Amino acid sequence: MQKHNFNAGPSILPREVIEKTAQAILDYNGSGLSLMEISHRAKDFQPVVDEARALFKELLQIPDGYSVLFLGGGASLEFCMVPYNFLEHKAAYLNTGTWAKKAIKEAKGFGEVVEVASSADANYTFIPKDYTVPADADYFHITTNNTIFGTELKADPDVNVPLVGDMSSDIFSRPVDVSKYICIYGGAQKNLAPSGVTFVIVKDDALGKVSRPIPTMLNYKTHVDAGSMFNTPPVVPIYAALQTLRWIKAQGGIPEMQRRAEERASLLYGEIDRNKLFQGTAAQEDRSRMNICFVMAPEYKELEAEFLAFATERGMVGIKGHRSVGGFRASCYNALPLSSVQALVDCMQEFERKH
Ligand SMILES: *Cc1c(COP(=O)(O)O)cnc(C)c1O
Picture 1 (cartoon, rainbow, N blue to C red):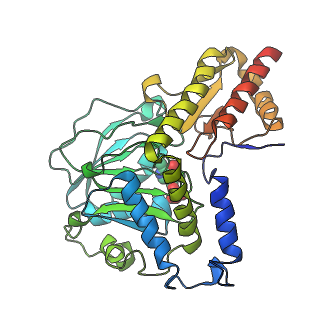
Picture 2 (cartoon, rainbow, N blue to C red):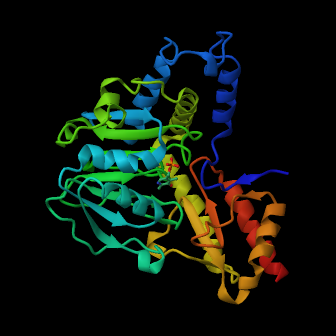
Picture 3 (cartoon, protein in one colour):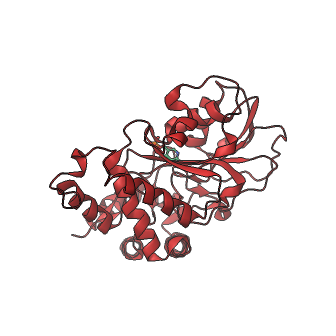
């Protein structure tokens, strides 16, 4: 049976990315060696990093003066590296979910942290919009897509301080005005590559401004100067990321990824809103295009386990909701074909006819 992969992360990748990476693991560029056996400093690996960096810049239209890094540690390590490198006196954070909260917790060890707004009291079902960012903040941190709660900031906010964005789960799904940011980061395992690599886009002249000493490995400057090769980078995930970046470009780049994201989301939200058995959990205007959360309507609550089994039998994978929301979550990342969303919608309609 065909599987429809709605996993939240690690998650679906384009089939050709998996095949090309598998091929390189068996025999890298006809060298008779595996991608897993070569030096990261080998002359035929350097072009992989160079091309991945160049494609990041090209696809996201990153202006001059920014560096693109491929690091280890996950987005979670960035929660600490960001304040380490940028927080001198005060930083502002928007509390929109579990990941934002974790970022806030880490920052508190480095200086004053102002939580400008929070939707915690509403179980993060919306993105707060009425807030003021202190003009003397070193940066304003946002989580552009809240993977767990299914809300998304669909545009880069206009504020009077530079932005820092956790884009783990919506990178390459919409255009970004990178010039508003001093740092954009994310774990690659949602939209780009297998787990193990973290992408970081950093504004070069925003570095070196804090007075504290920074441990070598946690200093962005180390990795900027060494071109992400200060120590051994995650070779296999970077290779896979390059294949995804090439795939994105060949498909038509970010405009096409955005078009597909909107097409998938409108199909699935349309069904959630139409089908009497289900209802969405996030506020309409903040609904994520990447992680679509829904629950059984109150009068059908007892059908939840039955629908999960019903959908699983029909090839749906990874649709059980996160424990903090319950119900269901269909993650619809860039590589997910519309046909998988259609299969889920068919399943919801068939289930409705049954009840
Ligand atoms: C998954 C996720 C993280 C955590 O990423 P790790 O790479 O596992 O540390 C952080 N932020 C967001 C928005 C995520 O979706």
